[in-house]
Image (cartoon, rainbow, N blue to C red):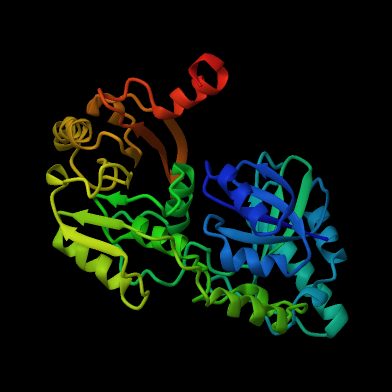
Length: 394
């Protein structure tokens, strides 16, 4: 059995754990920033191909104890690098440190690179080239106070780079974060989904791919193809399976609005060639939006003054947005991702959940508002929990 570590945006470890289990991972163990699992080596092909939430899939090849850079050189020298990849590969070494005693990560990185190249020279009398920008193989080294773990990145480009995004707006949400938010919301494809500030269409496209069972990685390449143990037959079989999407349930309804015509042009450009006819787009100011159904899921990432939008204007806009939700969206589940902690107070709604998430470098919150009749004084989720705990409420 091999050990793999799937990295992800902070806050998505729980839904990633469930996803890895669904994809065949065993011995699931969640840690901040990722999830570890075990499986035979072809599991890494499936995880790269089908995970919607992971950022990278790292293959653990060793671990040990260290005190300084020379210990790292010694430990790296003991690993059989030529068994992992060819000397023809261009490599990159990346060290990620947490409370490490290392004096210089740059020097430590150089020593690890030297150890890898020296091992190749001893075995094959040649050394791999180093490429910082477009390596074939990236070696990832995690170090803490005294422990080191060695990984090979099997993904290459981050997994949120699906290949469908042709254009992006000023503040795009990453694809895997959007997919993770959809999983957190509980949307299954059977309910109406609306993004009233859809921008370039990330939530919409990820939702449609999810509902249709289209593998997010089917249109891109991966670093595991450069590994010595790469099995073309197994990979070709998995990729062929991914080309046959699962038919969605009846009545798939995904709707996106934006007041900016340029944003809608970007969304339509990103949709080209994907065959996602279920997505409906329209140019509408969010405050004029009419719900496309009596109930459904509203999921959005509005402007919030950090990367776009004027904060004083937003202070006037937020209460209007709250009134819109209260007046028109009774029966809907609303999920808003924002880095603006003022949002619940300014829209005058009490969130039933708030989940810390990172949108790139921005620390954000995903707020859940369950719009029940008479306001959202008590969420439907809370009511169900109380009913489960009190037989008299069942």
